[in-house]
Image 1 (cartoon, one colour):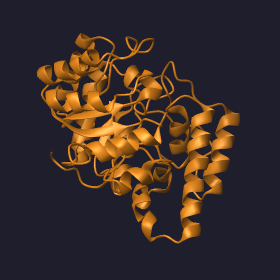
Image 2 (cartoon, one colour):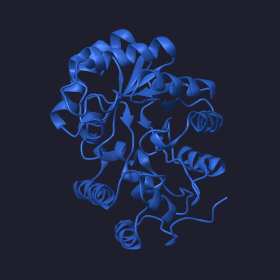
Image 3 (tube, one colour):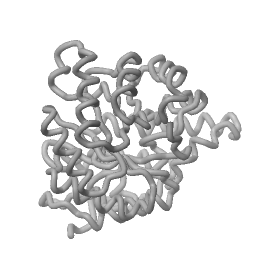
Image 4 (cartoon, one colour):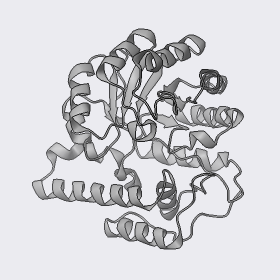
Length: 307
C-alpha cells in the first residue's frame, strides 16, 4: 500500500456563476487557499464539487486546473454514474485531464431500493479499473447511495482494483471503527464526518476529508487534539457540531458550504440545478454560527460578481 501523507484532503466546491457558467479561475483560487491552509491532496468533483452537474468536458477542465495547482499532491476525481458506460466515460474524461486517481462509489439507483449485491458493487470497481487503470479512492457514502459498502465488499474491492484510499462517510461509529481495525494497513482511510474523526485518527486513519475547521484556514487543527486542554477539546467539538448541524439542516450539499465560503471571501459562486442556493434567512443563520466561533466572515452578500 502506498501511504498518503497524514493530514487533510479537502473536497472543494466547483464555482459556477449566477448564470451557471463554470468559473475555472475561481476554482483555482479556492484550490490555492486550501493548499495555503495545508491541504495534502484533494477529492475534486465529488459531492461538494457537484459531480452530477458537470459534463464530461467540464470534468476534464476542472481536473486540468486541479492538477496544475496541486503541484504533485494527489488529486482524486469523482467518476461515478448510474450506468457502467457513463461511469467509464467520466473516468476517461478525468484521465484526459491528467488525473492522479479516480474516486469511485457504487452505482446509484440500482441499490437505492434493494439490498446491494456484492457482485454488482465489486463489479463496478473492477470494470472501472480495467477501463481506466488509475489509483482509486473508494467512496462509501450510504447517505447518498442508501447502501453502505460492507467490510466483505471492501475486501473484495481491494482484490480487483488499485484502491489506495477510502473515504468513509458512513455515520455509524461501529462501522468506521471496524474499518480502521480491519483495513488500517491495507488502505489509506480518510474519515469524513467530524463527529467521528477523532476515533478514526486514533485507530490509524491517515486523515480527514471535509471538516468545519476549513472555514478557519486550519483544517489540521483536529490533529492537535491530544495536546489540548480538556475545555479546549470541548469547545473544539462543540464548534464542529454547531457548524456541521447548521450546514446539514439549511440546504442540500453543497449549498451551505458554498454560502459559508462566500462569506469568508472566497469565490465559491452559486450552485447548479437541482441544488438551490440558501435563502437570505438561511444565510443569516449560517453567518451567525460562523461569527459565533470566530470565522473570518467578510461578506454578507451571496457571492462576488460573476466572471
